[in-house]
Length: 189
Image 1 (cartoon, helix red, strand yellow):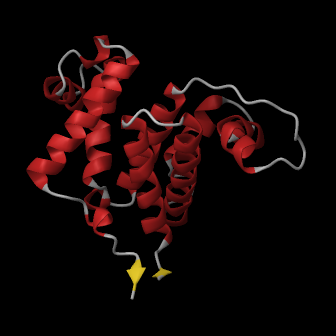
Image 2 (cartoon, one colour):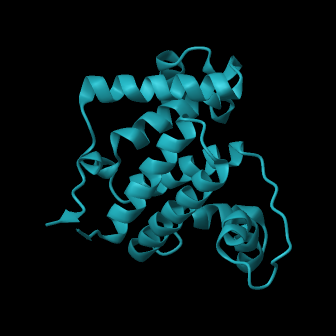
């Protein structure tokens, strides 16, 4: 069976799978690979429409580093996971919560391309993320609403937060139905 997709579809599908794996508390390396690929595609698509308008560009600018150096930091884990030609004996170490932040940035990039295109999984993740990390803006209305949807989430252990995220995702799916991404539109018969 043939598989067909656009760059946007590829990024959205990768991001949805990263979210599903995250909430299932699966391998952080697989999550990072999928989330980084999705983020890179979304950021590039935003840059095509609005040069220097992606969240990635804002992070680079705010870092105070040269673009090349900032990208090296941002992409270090995913580059480690993709290449072994220059550093075959290196080891990788990162806090798995970095995946949460990367996935959130990828959802923001997707929103820049048109909020109607974000999947229910991405929207559910955004609510979970803002409830998990309320310090990002306790005065902001969407942070408050996320906290109301998932009260006390930030006080739970990581394992409990991920489990609550999975339960929330399943309840959203049950209430609002599946995303078009889940209906396998990429299959060409």
